[in-house]
Amino acid sequence: MSSFEQLHPVLTPHFKLDWLTKFPVKEIIHEFSLSPTAQTNIQIPQQPLEVVAFVNHTMRQVMAQRELTWGFSTLAAPTFLGFISIQNPHEEVTNISFWYTDISTAAFSEVFNRTVTFITDHFESKIIQVQLNNVNSELSTLFTQAGFTTVNELTWQLKLT
Image (cartoon, rainbow, N blue to C red):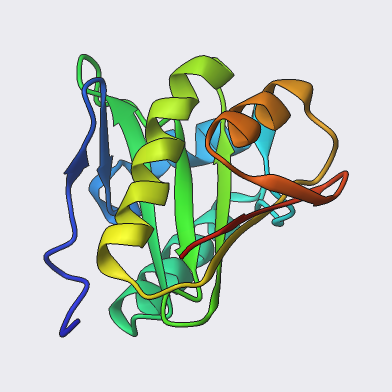
């Protein structure tokens, strides 16, 4: 794939996934100050300058094709709700990381499933992996429905053929 530049926005029936830089940084700072509904094992910055550095670093990683990260909002209201990231997209094991607030796990499933489909459509990964920061029964159900199996209570994998 020559460039990740064309890989945005990505739409689902109810959500729009776009670069973090397409969202006002004040919205991202505000959301990161809230307790998340769910997240993977990633460190979320809390201070405004740390959030700006996080967004800049993330976009540099995207442009270097090391990860593909989108912020997401509903189609009805373009307010930042969280992000989802495809890390190591060119490796055998590709990781999905995410952080979100203000939506249900059922709603998030639309974003998650679209990301899984995106990986299978655009990359040659053999395994998609998710590593949670704590046990979450609703996410466990989502992962099971998407065909993932547990490696341990916090790690889930989908083996692709």
